[in-house]
Image 1 (cartoon, rainbow, N blue to C red):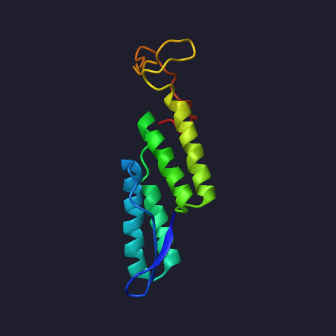
Image 2: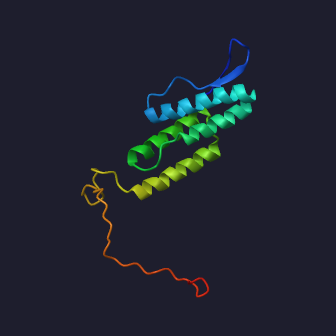
Length: 142
């Protein structure tokens, strides 16, 4: 949770709790802390520093390119929600993006599918199939 503390200089800062054990969450956590600290010094306003730090946290979120990264993404968003790092509307949106990514990624490799067969992650591209040419208006054709 974000805690309010007063530094020896008398300024109030917002600090997240201890560094998380999950490396993806730790990376986002670190981005938030560094950006908050720099922004607080530069703009001398907690609200603006908080906005920039929240953007940095989101920028550090894992890519949605594998099951592990999707799981890390969801964990990071959950951590952010629990600690008030990002607003509820944004976290809901981010979780819906992760849900779509999971549906596109298909079953996890090595896990049984509904028919009892393990999922195969081999992707093949059919190069023998011919694709139709796009329709172009006469006035656009050269």
